[in-house]
Image 1 (tube, rainbow, N blue to C red):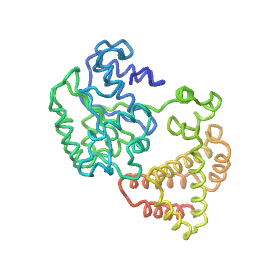
Image 2: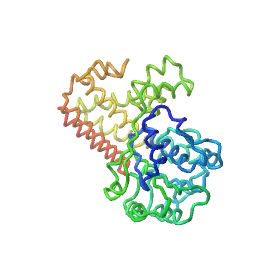
Image 3: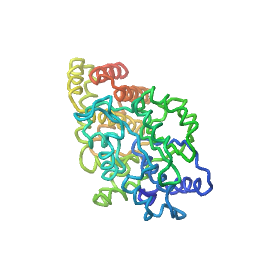
Image 4: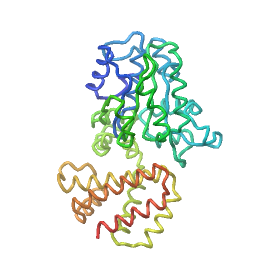
Length: 371
């Protein structure tokens, strides 16, 4: 991955390259961006630039031995840590990133702008709760205790550190604050507020913005999407390429129908229906569970926009009609409150809570909020 492979974000690229040129590379950096932002590709491109043997003014060369190995994700001085779970072949106490590296390389090669759901689908962990374990923190220390094999820097990229177990986070505090010489930590987070303050206080924040509409259009066209369709999809995707691709492949239809039925039951205060919906929800995959909550958040956001500035509303078709009715039934205070409730439910879902109980509790709170 090179900077040239990432659409847009030219100022951010200049900022990162400038730090290298000025010999001002912080030993611990936090690449923070919401889900859908290219913070992981930016971290990988930055790592490639750091160890490139013949860097240009605006990118790594792409041709030297270091760049060649980075392009295949096999550079001996660039290490990755990411959330994993047990599989049929790997026990939970043995689930560390190193065991998943072949799948990780496959994921980065095929889906460089992917998300957690795309990653778990690659190795078959869609229905498992993922984390970064205490054992992983010991592996981090072990790997970084070795001298660099080839590159100028030893680089540790930790993707989604918010999934790090508390004991794992505490386990890397010392090496994060006082790493070995020429070591660079890059934490790549979609929700840095969930990180321990003892972690964030030891890092330099690098905010990675989401893609703008023109970048989304460019990436969709590269994926074979018709230009006209890409122009319509980009404003709705809110800077998230994965959302844009789901829309392009008509994968949002089920989410909308499920969401609409759920909200109707909440509005009617049909508790029997909500109990049944919670049972049905519990039986779906982890991916579907997370997707429904994320879709709900997007609709509540659009309802809020429609109330305050309908001219910039991004949805259309049946979703727009639903949003109009929805925004008419709820005032701004209620929309904000329910959005917060859904965000909290999503947080607990991702932290191993019971899907059935989380869904039912959320449904009852929503029903109570809209009466």
